[in-house]
Image (cartoon, rainbow, N blue to C red; front, side, top):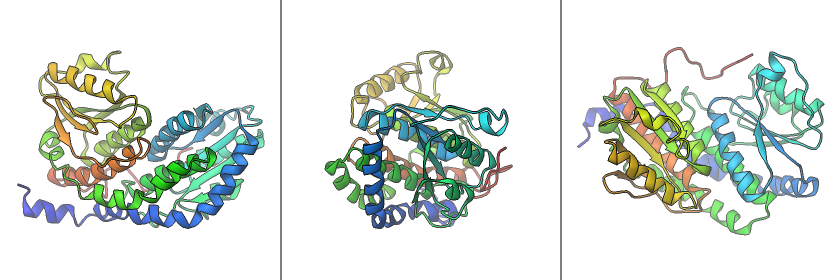
Length: 348
């Protein structure tokens, strides 16, 4: 049973309050649906040969999600821009006919701005998903969609990340003209509220005394695995590394030993059976596996809401945020003020 003092402390953090607001942010995006429909029609007409994503930190994990979402639902290859190519090396890329998809909470990082400006000058059409629609990056964009997350004060991004994922799914739904996905998006706010109430408290005792762990996902779930690993680093000072389950046997499995903690995300698509097989292999090697979205004998099951496989990772990261906040408090840390970090990171 949770300590009442720990529970009260966890629920008093900015991270807790802001993560709990994610459903409202996603609901606010619905008012911009006509604008996204116009952008989707533009993309179908333009028929780009490639999408280049530009992002840092949590937003880059959203870009990973965008890669799988766009490639599996639209069939257009997606590559990630390396900001230093523009900001440090001052190299010019050939981007005629490309879409530059920039994702950012602040839109103020100098290297992000330099990359977007460089790609636009090289012929790319810039679509920006931004929480701060008055930012410098917003001024460069050809098309702008506001994330509608509102002000986020905790250093740990939560609601802005979920809003980014929702915006990406909305963009994909309009680009692919998918009525089924549009309908599933309308249910997303309610599903997020239900996901926030799910009990992931098993994560706290499992990771409270840990020093190293893996976070695994695959396909559209890999981006949330990356995000979860980052949050465990910055809020709980854990050495958490994210891997695709497909990469685990290419080296990382060698570090698994008895009691080694592993958090796994899975969704109900073609990757589900492989996730269950990987969980079983880890358990055979003595790992302590917490598994969301699938089942495996010996794994600690984390409850999840069912939806479209594209939306299930969004719901799972919402449940994770509440547990990650509680874990940080249980470890005696302040999740709102991680050491050596700032809310707006101005990388050059």
